Amino acid sequence: MKARILFVFLILSMSAFTGGDITDEIALAVKSGNSKEISSHFTDNIDLKVLQQEDVYSKAQAELIVKDFFLKHTVKSFEIDHKSVKNDTQFAIGKLETSAGKFRVYFLIKKSAGILKIQQFRIEAEND
Image (cartoon, rainbow, N blue to C red):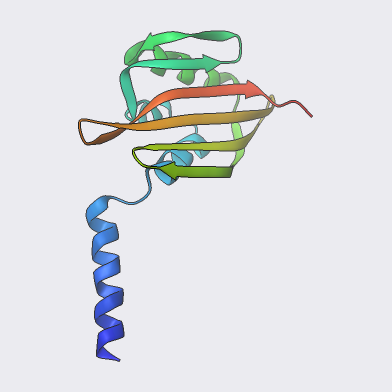
C-alpha cells in the first residue's frame, strides 16, 4: 500500500515539474478566447492562418490577428478532436464553435532550445 502511495506521489510530482500538457494549456486559452495566452506560446515568427489571412507573422502581429478574430467570433465551445506527440513535435486539431460559425483549429508545437513553442497556428472555416 505504501508503495502505491509513493508511486502516485511520484507521478503527480513529475507532472507538476514538467508543467503539464501544453496542448491542454493552449486548448483552454482557445476555449476562453484569450489571444494573449495563446500568443505567449508562439515562436518569434509564426506561420499563421486565420480565415483569409495567411503568412509568417511576428509574435506581436499574430497576437493582434488572433485577438481580432476572437473579438468578432465569441467562443461558445472548443474541443480537441485529435492530438499527437512524436519526439520533439506535437500537434492538435480541434473544433471551435463561435457566435459566427464553426471552425477547425490546428496548432503545431516544436521544441526549440528545450522550450515547446507553437510553430504553426490555423483557424479555418469548417467544411461540413
